Image 1 (cartoon, rainbow, N blue to C red):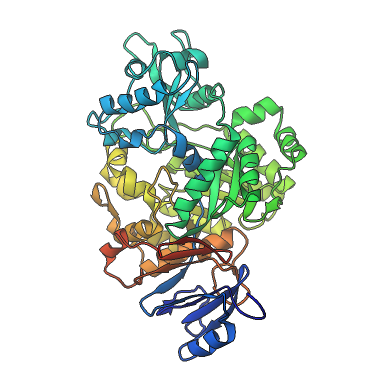
Image 2 (spheres, rainbow, N blue to C red):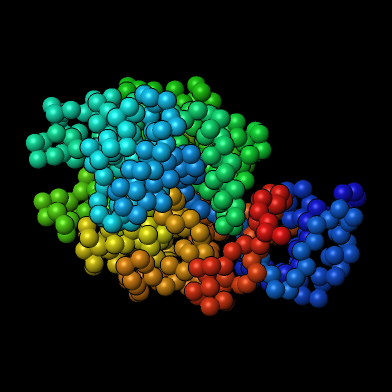
Length: 544
């Protein structure tokens, strides 16, 4: 490419950029990593003449539609990378099949080495509709410890895994965690939240080169769904280093804003919040760290659990003596958030149940009263699933950002209905009310816990269709509103509000579809796939 020629020109039928109040865009030119020119109706030929060169790649088809690349503000890319090489138990239809997949991996693994499954499965996909037990996992192998990781909050260990993790007949219950026990009171394999955290301490991390391979594979899959940017909410310092190596090698197909997973136990081990932050900064891990497509966003706290342990104001439908778990002491949470604000460390806090959301918003209000005005986006509510009208008003008044993930309701609806009941489940993610109240929200998937495809998310946000039928149709929003939550709103949270405008000078992050996601029949969203995805002017996916 020489002179003023572009490396990429797209002339579709329409471009849905996020700059409001301006004339329609019907063609754009990319040079390097930026959009350098756009054209409106009747100006497309002039743009082609000006920017087309001998090496320019041109996509000229009036049937195509361009959208800004999706910005998924809560997406576990690192966990998806680990799933790439974990045992693919999501393929299993029953517990014997689950065990057979692990047995095959064990036959290829030296004795004594840990066997870890992919985390993208749920027991409701199994004929038995329950998790396997330690004794059942022992049928796959007794020569290897096994961790059947499920999502980010649950895991099942076999007998050898329980032994190595220190779980035995005399192990007491773990505050903020759950240990499943048999009739004799012995741990039976399933661990949750703080109990699982203890087990994870003895599971060796994946080798960096293997994890980097997983990042390359997973991020390419993301690009194939039109995703250009993710905010990854559960990364360890060691995994951050793998991220940096992968980016340096040009292996990341998407941008990632990583968050360091931070537990009360980690802060206690460090001696104080300040000492914990000192240790991160000594490793050059700071919120200002930027490397190409990679950013260090801040920290991730977890206040309650998920389907099985979200902190609710009323008891669970299937466990009338249980109302969920709070994993932080109120005073310690306020102290930690205040210290992070003083030190300039953004924090996103997982709060899924209404009791957890209320506690978190009250804590943020106290921090604001102590520290004064907090920069926008410094303290974020992750999920905000069962947020009530009064707490919507609180979040709006405080200017607190909330990341929402309709995909969780879409994929986990049967489990949620069983645990919480139909009414509470239907109240999850009241997007219509949040938008109407002027709340600051953005969309994501929580993948691999929720389905990855953002068009599926737009379908669900506009239809409230779930695997358990339509739930809460009064909370639905339009496709255009859903698209904005997945693009401009996410870019605003990440501090780059102009990144989805597709105007001259903006990053060349866009996705091209063979039909218009905003006007096609709604169910077409379930099988509509991108023709091309560009991230920073680099074509990271192309079906051609």
